[in-house]
Length: 402
Image 1: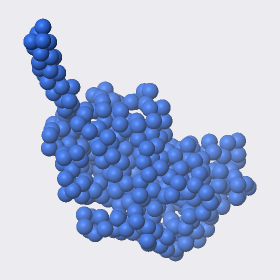
Image 2: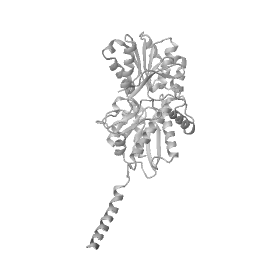
Image 3: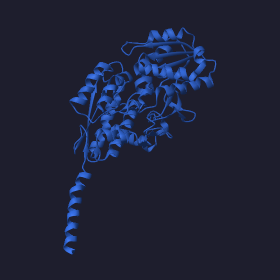
Image 4: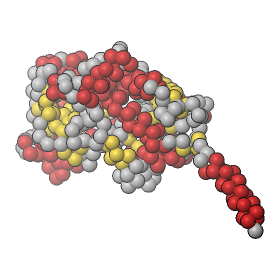
């Protein structure tokens, strides 16, 4: 009997040994091996929005640092970042290449609302993560209909609400002129601002003019807005066009209160080209620490960012907050990969994305990344700031942008 018991025990142990490797087996999706994780994106390295290409270069530089430190759970990140010139047809072409030829695990950080819109349905049908894309369109927060797509930055419509509330509180009798890009990005800001004014939108908004992302300039639109007599100018335009509009308004002597959307607040990429004197007094909302703000001189997070810029992104402009953006969103991506462990399937990537809670070092105090299966908006707070001719000076409390 004793011998039989020992035999049974040995058989059970053998069974456990056979089962255990299967239980602990690594789970890999496309683009993953024991040594590598492949991510892809499209970015406007050329064209009218090329200033935002700095974010793609910053993300690549951050992954270079992670790889130099041994990678994520022992795997190096292979990052393929392709130029789409902010052209949706080109975005489709390049994204198909990334998915069908390069076999990326996920599309990460691709920039642009119309460009990401062009690939959203395709990626969701293919069940390819389209994550932390560089656009604040409100529609990215829809896990019911598009469970493979999520943004990262605050929603444009919610940001528009913040601007509208500021105007209602401080200039309740204002007349407002709006410049916006004629695509989903600009229209999202327009809707958010109009909704935020409520019934007063009909009387307060006296003129709204759009431009195309392919236009050489928006200066004629600024002249048209001046003719409205508005005393508030909401500049909901991308970097190059925001700079042109600020410069033109100053040149023609139009001095309204200017509100500038957060995607165009880089001192290096927007305000310096516009003219620092012309930019004085502009109000915006911020969620990232601005590298030109001396407040952060002794901040550990800023010091780490500065050291990373020096070593891994030396060609990047330290006055360009787009480099702060790229650094921070790449940190978020790395955290997701860490949480995945050895289950690096596309399904588990999205599971980890939907369970993420981070206090990133270059987010403003009180602002965090928080995502749950039912809340698909990662960053939901911002703070008002005014440009003093040198840097952005924050004021008021951190407010909800959703």
